Amino acid sequence: MGGSGAGGDRPKGVGPLIPPLTETQRPLRQQIFERIRAAGLIPRVTLARELDVSPASVTTICAELIEAGLIEEVAAPRDVESARGRPAVALGVRAASHLVAGMKLSDREHTAVIVDFAGNLVADEAVPRQPGPMTLDELLTAVETLLARVCTKAGVAPQALSAIGIGVPGFVDVAAGLVHWSSVLHERNIPLAAAATARIGVPVTIDNDANLVALAELWFGAGRGLSDFAVVTIEHGVGMGFVMNHRIFRGSGRLGMELGHTKVELDGALCRCGQRGCLEAYVADYALAREATTALNRPATDTLSINALLESLYDHAKAGNATARSIFRRAGRYLAVGLSNVVNLFDPELIILSGDRMRYDYLYAAETLAEMDNLAINSGRPRPKIEIHAWGDLLWAHGAAALALSVVSEHLLATQRDLAAQ
Ligand SMILES: [Zn+2]
Image (cartoon, rainbow, N blue to C red; front, side, top):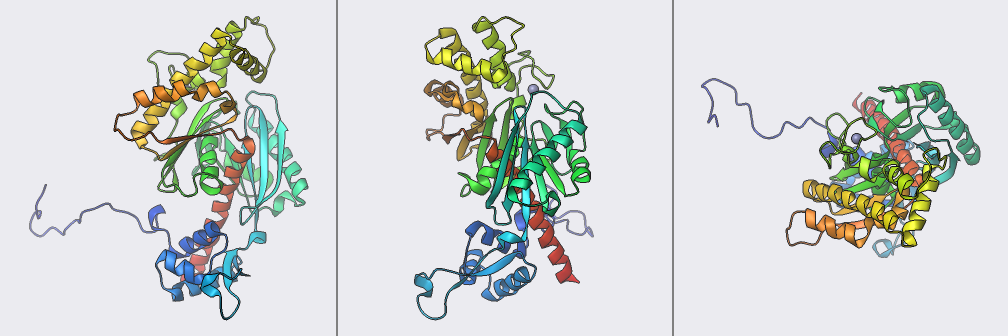
């Protein structure tokens, strides 16, 4: 501790050096817009009270937001507060002002949704695909085809969209728009966001698919009212999205929260990422499939798809086949190791287990959860809630749409702020 410092030096100050207008100090304009979007419909007076600002500032900013077409006045149903006098007026997001698309690209199928500016679903579409990595050109063609189909359903031209969000598995830097590695792409370090924007002619933002499931839960699901929760996805790989203080936590280089590649065995099984002993190499479907081929005594030349193989393994386990059961049980034990590490590191309020594989209930059987309890620090408190959301890929696409919506609204709010500053 330096005391008062050398004589004549200017005091350097103490405390974190937080730049103005960071995530934690959003401008009032953005806070007001986000509060209106979250409420659905909200009177000005309630808005001012909830944000603890003067009704005059709310009125001024709301007038600007209405002028800019982001929100609108709606006749609200009369409630106790406004039982007398003029009809009550509430504020809501102007749903028709923008449409965005959200897409999820995966090994089994590509899914897409179109939502309006208030987050209402307008259309959805899913296209099955052959598993395996694609070239960038093949992937862009797949995006274009899927977009054309979902836009036809919605009755809009793709170029009428304000933004597109795309989720891909793997190591994705959302800020740089870069895919460092993905199981759906042959090449590494692909500037996918720029390439897709150039091909489609609409701004495209990309993110890791597990982050988008967490975003979907935060915007539309069980996480709306929670400040800190985890979503662990088990599909072709194992992913995690973590919400910290109501925001997706990404890490300094946007590559954080790779739960699937945390190590659970030194020199263990080989993972798709090229390293050994990753959680994913014991829990993901290709790990189960590797053992299933042996357990079900299938020839090495078997052409059964991974899905069919796992369905067969699951059927055998349910019918009492001890070997088939042991494969799911072992995967469940490794999953327990991973989840207990999440609990010990982050102390989340809720852990959501998501993804198609959660239909295989052996993965989260009572034994798995008991194992997790044994491995988590013993505080005497009950463990965090665990929920199973075996929703399909449409939820993931919804998360991608939420990403696109936040890109659009943040751009509009920033433009408005710059105009106001002139
Ligand atoms: Zn790995």
